[in-house]
Length: 227
Length: 244
Image 1 (cartoon, each protein chain N blue to C red):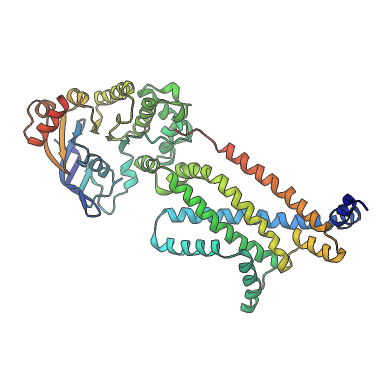
Image 2 (cartoon, rainbow over the protein chains, first blue to last red):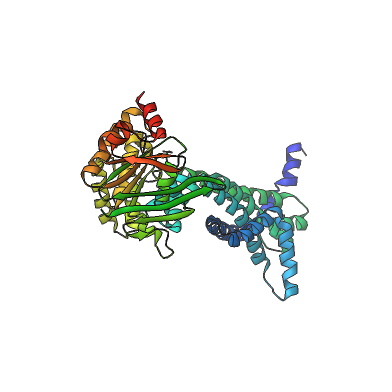
């Protein structure tokens, strides 16, 4: 056996690819479902928290800051295990899928809040003053003047963080969610070969490269010259 | 003489630093009042208190009979009647000139797009920039940006306009067009309060000059009085410094 053949046998065995690709495919479907749900709820919650924070009410800001710091510090795996194994003791039974979605949404929201907030405060104060001086309310100023400028600044870090958090869908494997990693590792155990993991790796690349491309497209879309 | 703007006992502190130490002054309808004084005298802060962009520490600001400091006053409704023009223009960079001028018309006054654009184009026409309606701020010179900013305030048909050093950020050759627009506004009967260092303009366009120093009004009078025969020693120093 040549070196190349040995490599192919260990990582890219054709008959294993044929046998397990339906499993990997169903894993891709589950990963995509969770990822899309996490992106939507995580970014929406993060944006909402940043906007609430802009009202600078101490009563609202203290819990927001505690939430954000906590979920930025906590490894997602720890939160996932606590929620998944803890909630049933309280009589609340939710699926692994729901736990994964909930925890990753909160993690993404925490990071997204910080990114949106830094975008909001980076818009020059004169923009607020000009808008408010024409009678626009705080909310109208935020939605028409500040956010369109802030979000453009936020797109690159937001894209990075969104990809980083959604990749954590792979943690679903420890609580039995049938996503890509789960399919890959169980196929690996059954076959005793790393080929299914390679397939999983390829699947992640196939999913996330378009997300990166989408990020730079949005960046261009939101671009205008500075005054 | 009924005052359109009436400021009484206005005080403003930042922390322990007192910027305004009891300002009393009023502006009649159609009057152009110039506020001059050394930098750090509180001119801009005073102006910014007139629409509560800066929150006064104490005192009263009454615009057209409405006390801006009263708890029941809808400050957003009052602000659209008080136009403000800033040193840094502060145009919205993500909107065209027309978009800048029509935003408040649509959001605050609830006008339809067509109606807002008709008013917006008329306002841009008044500052001589109708043809720049589709341009973004980055495509305009500083002087043009400032004229768009004036049109943005003008479109709301304010009762009074506040100018906070409107020409200080402009190259000298662009100042003239902005002052020309202000001259036209004056001729059309607009009430204006201007903080500026354009002394020549003050001399021939202002109805009244207010001299401020250290957070107080030290002297006020016609341009002829202030520039020709200043009474207070600080005014004399300031005016003398300028004519040298």
